[in-house]
Image 1: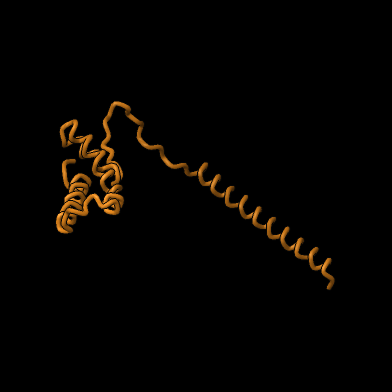
Image 2: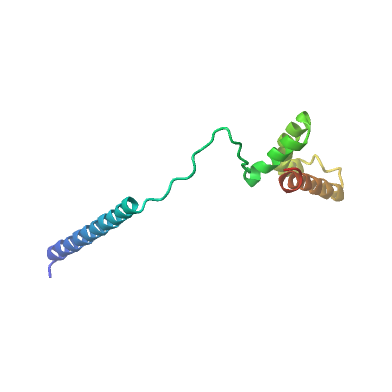
Length: 127
């Protein structure tokens, strides 16, 4: 068998596979369309724009929601801004040597307090 004949045969096989796949796809779509026409799903209840709904934020926004709902105005803004900034700045604060005069026990206690504050805002307080 020459290489030209073999290439032609592979092209025919590929075309046949693509056509079979297209036929199966159309059959599946036809089945789905037929089922959706014969047995449609019921609609949900009508939306009421004046009825309040309770939406829980994702875990990473829960701390901000709890801080806003439980802490007084300026303190909540301070907690929302400072806790993440301190978490992100801890490696640079450590490398810069700003805490070099502070004992390691105090640093560990500060890290625990910072983590506990974030955890309390996220899972413990309020709502």
